[in-house]
Length: 292
Image (cartoon, rainbow, N blue to C red):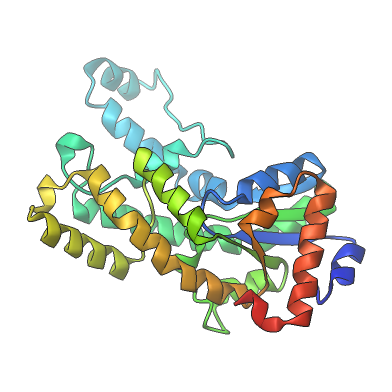
């Protein structure tokens, strides 16, 4: 780890922290707070949706617009410009492109197309993670930001292997940032499931896990792939996805430190954040198994 103790972290001229864990537990909350206090905020999802999947997203918009005669004519004559407006706070264009598998009449994608977009996302996420160290240098050299916080996607654990000491992505980022797992409790998981049930959103699945859950859902419902309700499938898979991610997050945590979602909820200022990280480093020094 780049900081071996709380004192190392507090004395560092350049504090560099990467947050990971389930979506909804405070990664972006903390990142926005630190950005407001003068840290550089690198959002992996934003990087994915702009640098690596921006053209896919815009082309999908254009594909839909071409179905409308007026818009088709305007596009063919370069009279209109279509682009996504992704921001740190609004990643809807990326989610919309990722989509949901199932019945086209209910907004679903054919499984093959869904898998193609999933593969694009996985490749983009790896690339965006590997860009992190370059952005650390840019933040310091161009903009003179002293400190750096990386706000990762909830699916980071799907594209790295925390049990592999030579994982290329983890090895790269751990050389430059302190990895911090925001660990949720069962109560947090249940609340996330309730929130997701109200408004299902597209998710990234490891290919083998996607096919496992897809097969289970088809068997349970007795439906063909083209008749699957996309939102019903996402609801079916969400709790299973969260459960499958927990050991993967825990393996990643051995590369850094762990804080709880309750601790994150108590952070109200940049000083509180520094205390949070320092406390986690002290725990790790006292008991290296705490991270797991």
